[in-house]
Image (cartoon, rainbow, N blue to C red; front, side):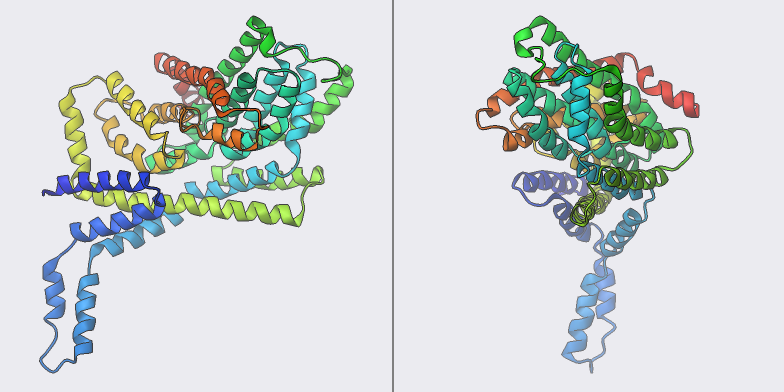
Length: 472
């Protein structure tokens, strides 16, 4: 077999092993080191080390030099260097800080206050409880960036309330599942930080570029919720005064000041300081983490147990991301050294496709990968395969990254592997069936495809703010 064929074998074996359920980060490292040992193996260096023995050498000295000769392979140097590169990456430093902010906010009892006040404030809007749930999901998801936590918490809080208000079960389930995924797109998004580290695109330009597409998708969700509530009132009946009390103007303002605005101000302060160049993402994330602690203190929700849980979850998730990067960098370096990257590039060139066809093909592959894999694994492992091809089709990596971020919303919403549906099913009342949740997320899945089509048709949605803030 030629080296490029071995590279393809390496990629195929990796996909097969992942489907068998092995841990992805350690699979990447093991396969990178295993195939890398073959790729960098130098038999001459091994024999030169062994030939340093003289006739009087003991068997122990012989065995030691033989073992050293076997380990005299550049793959081990590569693995150590890649580990150091990942751990010293300044962009990734923001990940644990944003995660800590999210976990602290999650435990600060902010969400129940936020949903209650928004529910009252939007009472006169068709589908008011769905609108309140969607906005709460979007804001909370933006603060945490953790889809499972948002869907689970909102499923415990908002889904029973909507079912008591006689909402259609599928409709209510779809709102929570779709709203919970918005945090991986709307800044400050951890997913965009990971894409920036993998692609080399400026994180501040990514944040600026993702703002309008994120608001576009959230707006399409809201349009669907309100539109269906108008066209099908039985799916979202108007709440009675017993279900949602009416309050005066000033009491409502006080409710919003105590629930909505603190979290919104924290997010906007963090995001604004990044976009306007007042702080680096890491510095802004530090302020956000401190703000999350202060918010939890203000709500009297910060206990030692909750603080310990937040630190533990932050460390666990950060370690997962970092080791994925280490494994991915090692794997991709060996894959490229064997000629796999060049082989794929030549194959794509021979297809003689247009930039639009390439984008559709790439997004289709990412869409299919979203069924068995998490967004972090797709961004760190598979997106770098497409990045060298972007220059061939004159596609901006910033634009490609935003399309990927939109596309990855589908990885949580597409049956039969819609993880947000399974998160919700795990805590939903027994009468809520998984098939009902699946049918509820399908209209929101369609909205994701609509948003991607709009962004491709009008690319200035992505480029307008980066050009306005930072120039071309």
